[in-house]
Length: 171
Image 1 (cartoon, rainbow, N blue to C red):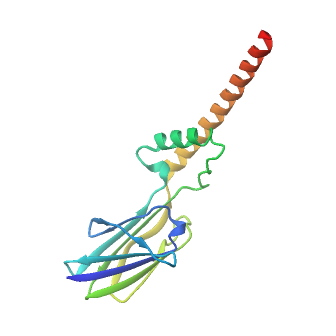
Image 2: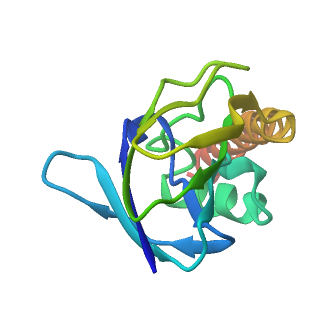
Image 3: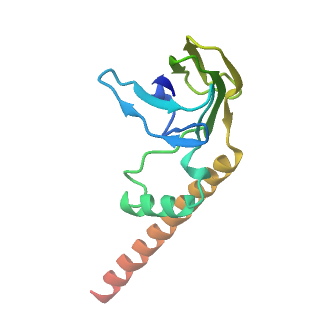
């Protein structure tokens, strides 16, 4: 049985990446220096590493998350804004294992079409995919959320004016 050690650095540029080795999702632990480490045991000589991340607005229940966060942040006052560009990331590489292999994967800041990470390691590896991309569906959904926030604020202002006027007319 072969052992694969991965050290992931620079993940502050990537939000909640999913790591899969040979099709199996693996968990990672944060060390004292802010990097993440994975130790995985493999049966075969070839391991496929897949690390990917998508914006939260491209998920299946994006509308529910956007609604809940909007309401709990007092109608968007305390809600952090979505990024200007909605970046996704994919890193897919095949590693030929020799025994106990160690790899360091350093992630870059997002830029459309640019390389997502640099892979340094002892064993032979080939990059099938290694890039950032702009998720157009998340970008479109970001615009929808912004329009709905503006419409709801206008409705709140109109309702406040109406109830203030009703209070003045009664008194």
